Image 1 (cartoon, rainbow, N blue to C red):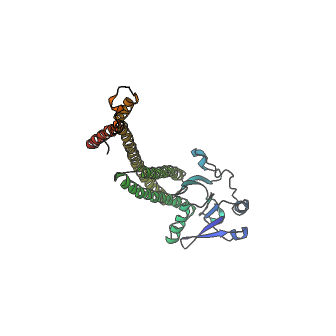
Image 2: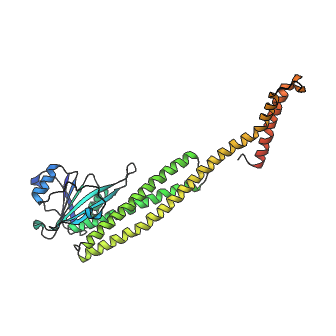
Image 3: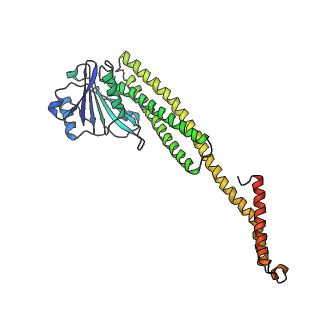
Length: 328
């Protein structure tokens, strides 16, 4: 899918392109390609003179492969954006190419973005740009505001994790955590730990991208200050993720502690039961010897007497254990 974004009266407007002729009617500052087809790549090549690299979506992690500037002045940035999906949380790689030397658009330039699926941060920026005239003036503003929206998206996700962990904390600290409840709590904690880790990685990646833009000397004084503010916002998220990791570790330890307590209760019951059954076992073993001169064996009441003695020898220890509180 190929979408172009143009500026009109300080607002950002989106148009979906379905032919090369339709593309030629617009002078965009942002061209977004979501799962581009070979035909859409050809349109971009013919109209803008830009060849989209085949390795644009490679999962490289070294900085030199993700942030670089071509000899012709094109700026290449490959950054990850978070998707907070309950079923499948993940990060989406987006390749940006900032072309500032497009004569048809004079000084505005064009930002090209290539990705494989819809990115929530892109939707967030589009809504902002429609509601706030003057927010975006050129292609560099689009890229900066995308990173700013990414920081806000991460902050919103952290707030959701905070709320969920508060509920988990109430369940754990209320006590009487059953094994089934403990399993649910551990599953929730694991999901939040995974998402917190993804947020921390995403924050680190965005920080590297913004820092690269600042080092490239391509930003105006106002844009440079905006970039510094984005970095400050990202730094503030670091402390929140660190706190969440500490809280998650505490809740994990507390939940595992309750599981151990429940297991100890079960083991204690079996231990007490085995001790209580030792006397009747001894009596049964004694009469199992069946010596010839055991006087009660020749009596009619000998067998019920032995059974009653075994029951009594089991009941008395159980009553004693209950009185001592060992069966609780």
